[in-house]
Amino acid sequence: MGMFEQIYQSLYDQIRNTDLHPWIEEIAQGIRANLCYSSNGHLPGWIQSLEALPQVTPSCLRLDQDAVTIGSPGDLQGDQPQALANALMSLHPWRKGPWNFFGLELDAEWRSNLKWDRLKQATSPLRDRLVLDIGSGNGYYSYRMAGEQAQLTLGIDPYLLYVVQSLVARRYLPDTLPAWVVPFSIEQLPSAIPVFNTVFSMGVLYHRRSPLDHLLEIQSLLAPEGELVLETLVVDGPEGYTLLPKGRYAKMRNTWFIPSCLTLERWLEHCGYRGINLVDVSLTMSDEQRSTDWMCFDSLKTFLDPQDPTKTIEGYPGPKRAIFVASR
Image (cartoon, rainbow, N blue to C red; front, side, top):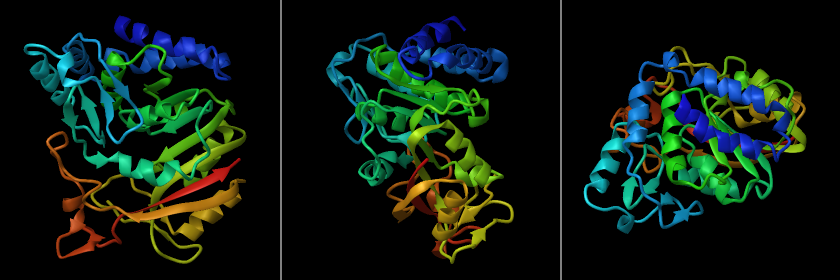
């Protein structure tokens, strides 16, 4: 726990300068509780991977290009490149990316930069905004948000491997960089904190048994005039149509409601959102989601019907994702 206390102390210092400051102790208690060894038997091994990372100061940092880039090849010496590669691979699978650590190109399952390009022009500028990234995974988007000069980006994800992956980058980033991933689900956030200027919920809504409750939870976290950026699976259909898969969808468990765009717009209206804007609808293609050396398990290719790639392996319409922007 000592290592995590030291790492996250910089987060607490940053929170003191934001509207989140009344909740510092609750956030700190949650981090301590969720990062205890008893919470996940793999955690000690993942910590060893962090400790095995080369001790080196990066010569550059780029958060404004497709790959989050930390350092250059010349920063490493001797056997440090291999030690870096071994440590990163021991944290497999890497879902979101790409990353570039000291010249090592980490090609994650998702080319998350493509989604970022689709949404960043449609959202309000993030400069000086307090941002929440729900289901942030390993922090790729959180660091891209920091590159847009957000005041503070707080990513939350309950899966500890992704939190540890985010700490790989933090190992080499300045303590003052305002982007963090903490081991929370949205339910574990302190209640009644309507302080976030922007909340991102990407790839989360279809995993919620009650999608309207999720939208209402987000609204309770938004500051007045705050903005929701919602990205989720959708299907073609009229207003009122929603797909409720029987069993899995594209081999995914816990997939509940996949609405049409018109239905999702009505959900947002019923939850009190204003200025609802559908900014993008895109089919998920194999150039965006695929197996790589850094995520060698099944991916999109095996999720689709080999005889008809417009359908999932279960026979449902293939994955299509929409991005909505709305205000509280």
